[in-house]
Image (cartoon, rainbow, N blue to C red; front, side, top):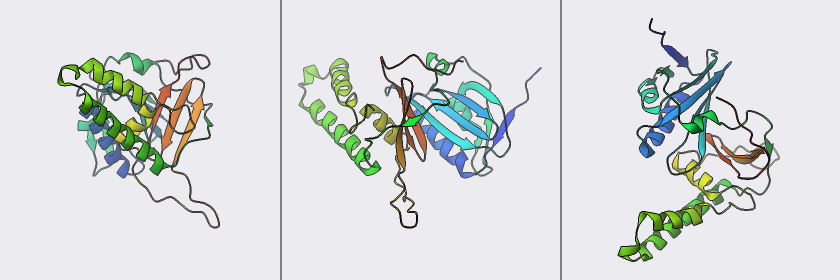
Length: 231
């Protein structure tokens, strides 16, 4: 018997377009990308791993109709099932998940860390790092411009930490590439300073760069015990 098709209704129809953009960027890096979908009550989280970044990306949204769901699916098929005008997404059939899908960031225990630069400064750091990579790549002799040599340069640059935090720069690069670091007008409470649009959180050996449009999570080696959400 064929299982009934599940359709998710977003609380805000604009969330469908944002999810579609996120999936499109994942597919840009890996046409065979898979995503893990978790829904509980009125909340939805879609996890993906953009190829070459070694991070997990998380896109969250509110649902108009509560659902309980935990499934790994094709990112491309999920994208095909999104109706932006209706604010809905049809959930495709499950696929065999990649190894990362079995070890997600913890759901709780997150504490904010200090030292994160402002969002404009984060974007500036990413742009400077991209420029450095291109300059160093161009200085390589033609015979030395191998994949291994370029990977070494990239690893050195993107493993650097951001500001006064332990967050590797590759996490900010991933956030920028996936559209999570889009400029937004900061809210200014009466008599207060503008509200920050980004934050750095930690739980166990996980770090999470949270923005208004999504989060980037990365594990730190050798920090605390392994803290995962089992498959």
